[in-house]
Length: 328
Length: 165
Image 1 (cartoon, each protein chain N blue to C red):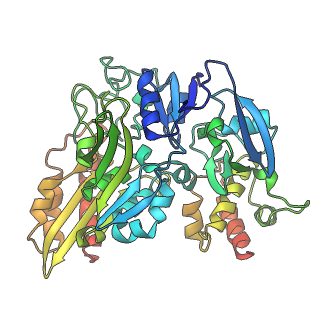
Image 2 (image 1 turned 90 degrees about the horizontal axis):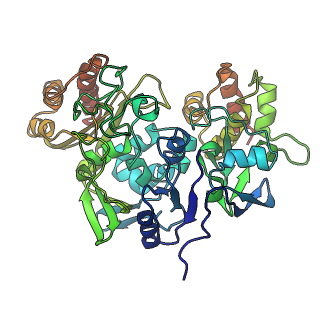
Image 3 (image 1 turned 180 degrees about the vertical axis):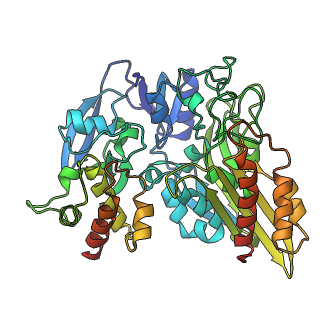
């Protein structure tokens, strides 16, 4: 790892100033993404601002809003009864990710900002428009089994690899960000940017902005939620396909539905069209399969990942069966 | 009023005070030194292994304030004031920790390279109360890889050590 300047921030305002002062400076929270990328020279910040001791770890209830401090550790959030009981999909998503050791170090704010696992991004010998804008994309003609079938462009087909953000997307979470103009609250959907022709820009955060909290609303719909992760190994592996869903049933029909997909898109993929197709329908495979078709309608397969289209449809059906409480 | 700690330029060092296996120790480290490299190269505690150095194998697992974490992905300077426990710190008064004894009794290692990380991880898994069944143990320990494939005896050892509590 190249050396760098190391500073400890003693307040969010100090942290923002310290990062803005030096081009390329980075926040250090849990370190699980940053240190890894620094060892590969994908990231080589001249200054690292340690925010790991800032008092942003609380999980607080205020009315029907649950506010999770951005520096809370993945494991602490996943096991918190206030979170697990109200947002099972969120707890399940966190526990499906990484390993016990990584979950103890990784913060939920950092989790949102994790980088793609695309080999062509992570290894400097390959051409990558995300790592070096304009250089090209070796994934297009390369081994793209794990790459995106939704939200991609000819500049970038890298998959967003996280689980937590997919569950948050399904449950309409908001992210609290502190910046120059004070605090702003953005829908999780609005945090992530599609690659388009500028894949180096992954989020709508301005330089120096700091995520301070994540907010979720407690409601019956969110309490009946689920996260299904499909992957090559039973554990300690990124998703090939994942589904976060929630359903509210009213008598014999679906009153409301939420659906987001992971492992197959360049950003956490909320499927509002699929949700609309479910609302008003009786829960059952007919409705679930229709929702799956709608959700994958715009999918564009690459040479090595066409299997993801069918796999995603089946995963959607299975996840919806689970959350509706039936096995068929 | 300064709102940041002393800044280190390239190749300069920063004082670091932390507790290693119950003893207060101080170092002067460059920013890029990981907790793993601090333990092995500065503290002479080579029981913790560098398997992949990328946070993928779990061989570098240590306890930080009692919680298991990967030392290869942690900057040493970020752990000022913390209590670090390594494999060298498990035995008490010359007696093996229950998990160490179980690994010996159940032949839970072959080459031994992953073993320190497996044991540290297992200590934490048992303390967390997540070692009640083989399935639970396999899931909880999934971040510790073993290329010799000693998994089945590792699971048996963790289960046995957990029962002994």
